[in-house]
Length: 110
Length: 115
Image (cartoon, rainbow over all chains, first blue to last red):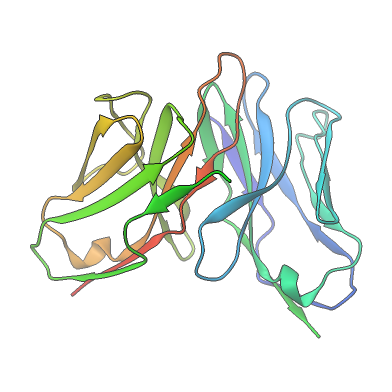
């Protein structure tokens, strides 16, 4: 079956530091890949997505590239802010079914 | 703006009570989902529905049931609440498009405590 493995947290960074959260997947067929973000006390919301190999999703300074050869979809941001503190979930969707990673908690300190 | 609304943000119920969690979406989505979220366990799918009056078991359906009488509403029912059902419950919905894997839209979550 499908699976998503993402970098264990928690991750703590200083403001303006570079962020990478690793995500690798196992899937049959051609899934779409997503990053969702969950702010404290809230539900998940879509951060970015990519629907085919070599696509780059981007939003709010975050980027991730769909790498079929390495089955990865790593999340990056060049300069994080305190307001980026949240839980980040990598997910894939194939044949109508979603599979989520366990989430990575990011804390950004001033 | 698209919206998935869960009826309660916080609930406290007693062991053995029958509990209803309601979810409404205004996007005319075919698919609706119920997850629970627990520390260290990520999101786990309880039940989902692809159409009105249709339901499918997810990964952890035991102790739960669902109802979808109208397209926009998907209810999660705890038949007899137990303390191990204390959790954050998340409802989500998405379009069903042949050949496309569309994103899910989530509600704000219901934090249920069973005492």
